Image (cartoon, rainbow, N blue to C red; front, side):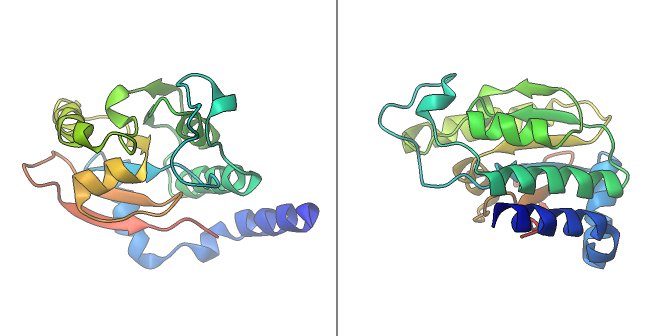
Amino acid sequence: MRLARLSSVLALLLALPALAHADEAPLLAALREGRAVALMRHAAAPGTGDPASFRLGDCATQRNLSEEGRAQARATGARLRAAGITRARVYSSQWCRCLETAGLLGLGDVTELTALNSFFGDRARGPQQSAALADFLRDRPPGAPLILVTHQVNITALTNGFVRSGEIVLVALPLGEQPEVLGRIAPLD
């Protein structure tokens, strides 16, 4: 079963150019050209929230990527490279599932950013953390594509839209008072 799933993922990777949606081309161009930031929810990690014993920095106490999630993250990286995004400024939440997703994209070094950390367990932190993330985005100089790997609550707070595991929401840069969502790139399932 696992070998069949891996074979399916390999077949998808080989067919990526044929699977790319035409409506994604302008979104990927905006990311490539620095006119948008990619807010990516971490790839598939079974469960919801974190266990009661959760400790930041200790992956054994956290909800982590499944094999499906690892394949999903690799496929997203391959998809971005096929669109000409071969290097990026990659920032991640300090949660293990986000750091692993960011690393598996294979687009560059990953920098931890506390403004991307989940506030699922403490919703009162949401407004302050969203403001810190918006400030971070407003202070970014133009340059290489910018990819932020984070959690559903963070993306929803910034964009007012739900995002599924492995999905990317592209937001226009420079960031305005109300972030402008340019579109979404669904994960390959």
